Amino acid sequence: MKLIFTRPFIRDYQNLPAFIQTRADKQLELLLNDPNHPSLRTKKIKKEKGLWEGKITKGFRFSFQIKEDTYLLRRIGPHNKVLKKP
Image 1 (tube, rainbow, N blue to C red):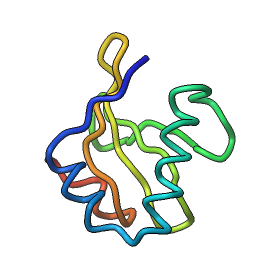
Image 2: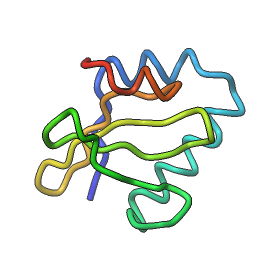
Image 3: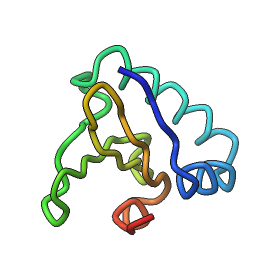
């Protein structure tokens, strides 16, 4: 699998505090190596077809879609922000 970063994801990531960026980097590495790792708590988002979310910290999440062999990273930030469409 590989990661593709959307513009909204990149913009969101750049606005995160440094310690959240560091944690996000670790979680994205886990996503690549073990998408079922317990700390990611990946799950489908019920309101959006084909959209998933993963946990960074208690209050921060990232959303993504799975397209063949790619994770399309859509948004990252506080839990309610990841549900916004890019």
